[in-house]
Image 1 (cartoon, chains in turn purple, blue, yellow, cyan):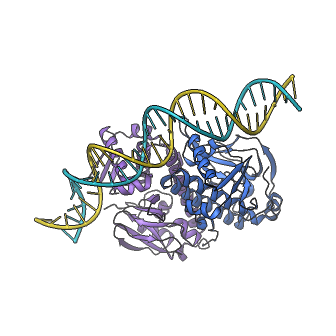
Image 2 (tube, each protein chain N blue to C red):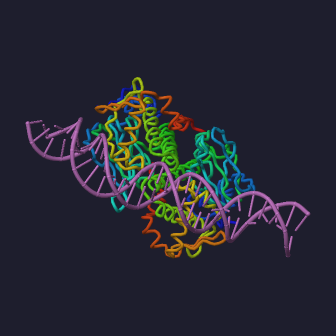
Image 3 (cartoon, rainbow over the protein chains, first blue to last red):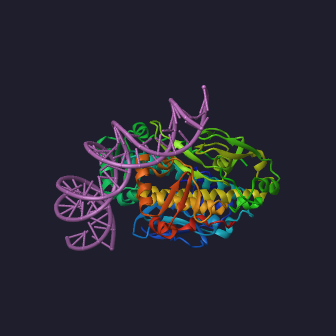
Length: 240
Length: 240
DNA sequence: CGTAATTTTGACGAAATTCAACAGTTGTGG
DNA sequence: CCACAACTGTTGAATTTCGTCAAAATTACG
């Protein structure tokens, strides 16, 4: 089971490692911890969310369905992420949120996230939103202009970076129990093709994936292959 | 030449039609109007923007380049859009902005966009950012799970909707001087394939495209083909 | 330990790309 | 206003990437 390892809360909003306890303490927020099974929807399109879900352990995703059953994952969520950020700020969801593995989430009543109560909190939420948007931009680049192998390589580099940020990576190795079918829906490929891509990366000695743990065997080479540049993940200042 | 037709400024930030004059008046902002040639970069990655570019006429885009020359457009900008919104709020750009046609832009010193001066303005910028993010999410769905024809159909539906919002559409017809090569870089296709897709849509009596003007001949059918649902463009409330 | 879910593999087909050539349009300077 | 050059659009043929279908092997889980 993935666990956030952290210590202080403002840190969470800064994407530095932190614990749920730290979060609650710093902003004096009530965080009710809940365990959610795999493949459970936390939010549906059109919903007007009452609580924010802070992901504490496990992996989740934002996604949209087409009428004929095609699914596209628009974001992969890792511990420390606010699953329904955009929906909370707009008071209405235009996407769904689903758990990809068993998860632990912290529920926070949205009334307690009011900008009126804490300008610092509002600013922190704004930074998170901009980071989500930067990640989405990079996914557009991947889906539009990278071939399958590069696309997978880029996603793995992104996940390693984001997980490292919350202290969940040791020696370029981290827990990763996402299904190949879920990877496919994130990467715009089929699960069959994802399987072949992973085989290629394995055969090339770039990754090692076994029993829910992924290791990047040669991160420099993988990042070169993916043309991965973490600049887009490092934008944290507040101009205005 | 495209022209914003509008009247009041708060309207711009609400994505309702408005004029540059209205904009300047309402928030008492200095807007210096400038004419920019086609294919001109307004912003480069890594830059720390000094002025915000409010697009007044023409079409522009945000894009990222890969080292080997592949280009992906991550957003198409129409009159009323703030070209460099994310970069302004973060005080640093992680993408480039380029004019796709000759454009008129209004330059606004970013110092005048400070949240401290006007909470209303800050809230409006936040709404714009969330709308940009919702559009990006939908692009991810298109790039990942729609085939070429659907992808093009969806983009045309989106552009019609956004242009209608600023009063630039009559009878599902609007000015569109974007190159097939630029469409390709937005849709993750090659220009050759874009040409074939457009031919299919023309042959199917779905669109008419001649001398820089695009007409959606059968919008209901086009929207069904694209599975276009404007819900994602209609989120304008402010929860917190 | 048995059932269901997931991963893996092969053969074949569809969508999109590449390469190449040519036609049409637009913009520019004389 | 014309002539030319440069850019943009159009089309065909061969190729690549990725998808579909199907089945077997492996793993996860109650």
